[in-house]
Length: 151
Image (cartoon, rainbow, N blue to C red; front, side, top):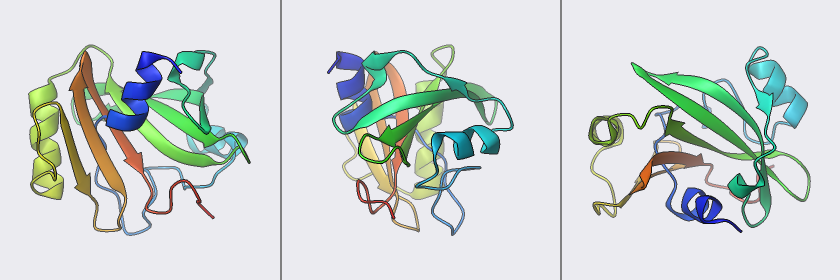
């Protein structure tokens, strides 16, 4: 597994607060690749960069995503065993303002636990884990509470 995958998987990056459905933005946990493509209204593209894969998942799609004024790239990760969506990672397209992103996460989710300089984690009101890492560049990841066994 490449360093980028390790960082993305274990440290992860920034994610938005989600509605009560406990899914990420316009997707639902457990969607197929084709369902995610349809949900993105054609914005998602196939991803050939296997360095973004991790233990038990493949990053099969990427799509642009706006997080306020910051342009992000969404990485859609699907379980190896059944090809279903199991997490979404975000990273700024141009490095972004990592301090501003982290401050917004604190505003949306409260104080991070743990709240280290390089790694921070939050729980959404629905139990999803939101992770932030600042190694190389900042990253966000949102993982549902049932990960890796999403229905």
